[in-house]
Image (tube, rainbow, N blue to C red; front, side, top):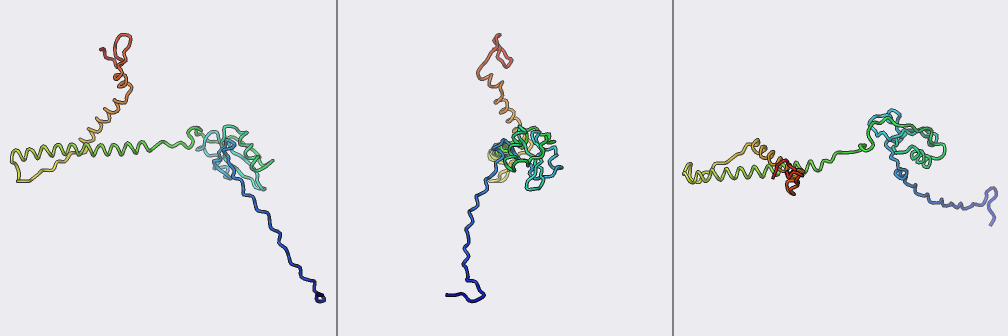
Length: 206
C-alpha cells in the first residue's frame, strides 16, 4: 500500500526501558570512627562551646556549594578520609579544631535517673508501711483501753493519727542503719579481722 502524497508513513516509537536505579548506599560515619554533630550548619553554631573538645570544623564543597560540618573523631585524618570518600577528591577545603570545651567522655552523658526513682518509690512505700504500723499499734492500744476502762460509748472507737514528722524521723533512722550495714566497717566486723596487736579493725580490742 502506498502512503498518501505529502505524508510519510507512520513509524511506531519504541520506548527504551531505563535501567533501574541502584539504591543509595547508606553512609555510616562510625565506619571512619567519626560522628557528625552538626551537618551543613553555620560557622557561628559550629563555634559553640557546648561541644566536645575532639570535634573538628570541616569546610567542604559539594556540587558547587560550600558547607560547614562539626564532626568529632580522635584523629583528624579520619575526618578527612570520610569526607574524601563521601564527596570526592578536592571537596575538602579545610579542617580545623573546634571550640568546644566538653570532655569527650562527658559528651552526651546523662546521669541515671532510674535508681533515684526506684529509691523514691521504695521510700514512699516504706513510709506508708511505718505509718500504718504505728497507727495500728496506737489504735489497738486506745481500743483496748476503752474496752478495759469502759470509757466512751458502747462500740465507740477513737481514730489514731500520726504526724508526718514522726514518720520521717523513723525513716531517717532506718536509712542510717541500712547505710551502716552496707559500709566496709560493718563487713570488717562480720569477718572479725584484727591487726597485729589483736585489736579488731573497727578500733575495739577483743
